[in-house]
Amino acid sequence: MGDVLAGIHATWEFDTDSVLIRFERGIRTPRLFQSLRERRVPYAALSSVTLTPGKRGTVVLRAVPRPGADPLLEAAAGQLKDGCDPYRLVLPAERETLAEYYADELRALLGPDAAQSADRFLVATPEAPMQFKAYDGRAGFDGDRISFRWFWTGASTAKWKAGDQTFPVTELSGVEWRSPEAFEGYLRLLPRNPETTAPGAVAAGTEAVRGAPPVTPHPARPDQDPAAVVFGLGYGPVHESLPFAAAVLESVRRKQPAPATPAAVLAGAGRRDPADIAERIRHLGELHRAGLVTDDEFTAKKAQLLAEL
Image (cartoon, rainbow, N blue to C red; front, side, top):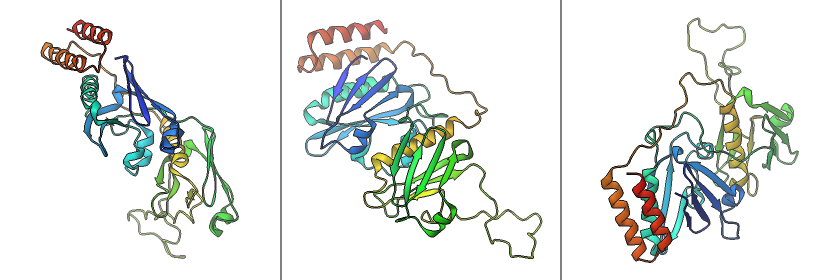
């Protein structure tokens, strides 16, 4: 598309196969956006596009990612507040017509698998090395290993007895992140091969019943689990701990054995329906008459649309 749409706290730059989201830096910009700086989102990672009324005379253009396409949202597991959603672009209400145009353009670029979950991550995460301070320790990630170094002022006796921890990503199956904005937030690392029998599940001197299903242990409380760090007021904020969790999750998935099914291949876009082209040109003309598109932009975009017939 080659266009730019500037909103509040972010600017979307449309390319042939992706949209580059650049986040502003400023006192009013959510700190998560400042931490992310920018994100390139392939159109193949999107499932739909919505345009809804916002607060205080604004409209919200949102690109909805496919489940499984973005490790940041997979790690967040629905816990992000609307104001920290990196896929929302807030615009003044007077730009609604322009927003509708870009929403239609984005919908036309969605891939054939838009309605399906992605079988791999399609959006990049912040790169290692990374670290952040939790309430009971410092978490670090170098790209291959995660380390927890306990603080004597916050770590539980159980963690002190276990000692500082190091976890290769190849031995993990995923991460569990609970927002520090919720009660008892934490980041827990999930092992690839958890023990199937809980300590003390079988009394000393007795045998497990043959053929009985294994006893699955309940995970320890995060403050007692050496594979978890806990958050507190000012410790493990979203803009530090969530990108960390996403980077670990992406590394874990990338270093797992390749899935049996081949990765989905984005099919090339075919010719558009002439009626659809005519409708887009009509919409483009409305923007031109409203002064939202310059003469040169109108001519170039119209020629581009006609070339797709």
